[in-house]
Amino acid sequence: MTFYGISQGGILGSGYALSSPYINKAVLGVPGSPFALVLPRSYNFFSGYFQLLQFQVNRNSHVRLVISLLQVLWDPAEGAGWFSGLSTGNTGSGVDVSKRFLIQTALGDAQVPTLAAQVTARNLNCSTLHPQTRYVSGVAEVHGPVTEGSVYQEFSYMGVLQEPLDNGSTPRPSDSMRGFIFASCRMTGSNARAYVLVPVLQLA
Image (tube, rainbow, N blue to C red; front, side, top):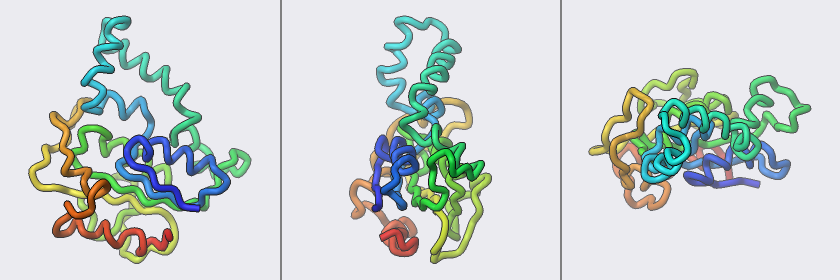
């Protein structure tokens, strides 16, 4: 069985796919992990959630601490709680290390940062397809077609602001960079590779 999750579905989808005995392949659109890394780098977090936390937590450093503590509650539901079984190859953890993933992200995503998606990609032992959009540390570049393992692919869109180098989010959200998932007709040029990624990976 194949799972397809987008955004929140991609974030929780890695944990769902890894924990399910019925899913052996998954496509994750703009995912990320862990939540404690995603939230403080998300534009959405500073559009209400951060302000709510400040009613009870006055210092920004304490907000960071609260989010990190909450991660313990999120671990069973998202990929971060299941990655240890992959890294150790511990079959007793209930994680099937043969599961395959296709991860699609967009540079400059203001809602789910690619930094968190890269964490997911490294834990799932993904590769990138040549030519890759940019170098991704810990993710090898390979030539397609890919018949084994998992693939991580970043897409670049013109007019999208660069991702910040600090712990913040991209200054403004851009729906166009997420459009390759929600409306394939928005894709142009090299981004059209999204059309062939699924058959190339033989996920169907």
